[in-house]
Image (cartoon, rainbow, N blue to C red; front, side):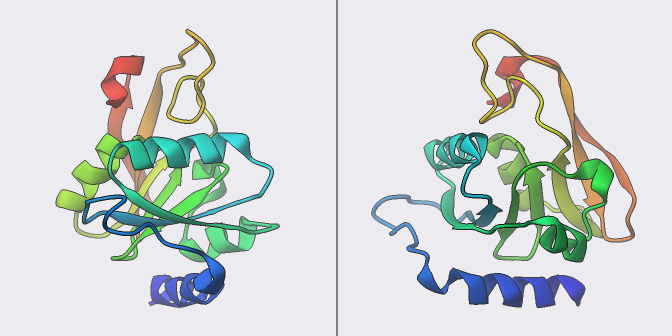
Length: 159
């Protein structure tokens, strides 16, 4: 129920955002992304999603802490941007498009969404030349628990 209230807030905030047309992106996956205006890696992550045929609408907000808190994302799993699917699932941080699609194809019971905590070097949107830091994609559950959804050991595993 709390997530539905958040999505209502999100819908209200999107009144001035232009959405990608079906001619631009032919996909059933659409995410509403909330970010700050000054975050360059968020823009790169959005480009990654679009290249992976995920439709995106983004909204710049001055602060994201309340949105993240109300979405049920514990501080340990937060990153710089937050996205919501049309079904209310949350994707926090630099989650690769491949894993978003996998998750949405068969969401686990009781799941809130996925998170890549922090900003790992080499994750989508955080490319830094040849630098890559292995990282975990965390499965966030509605009860506040979390577990590893996938371990990304190499740059290539993200795609």
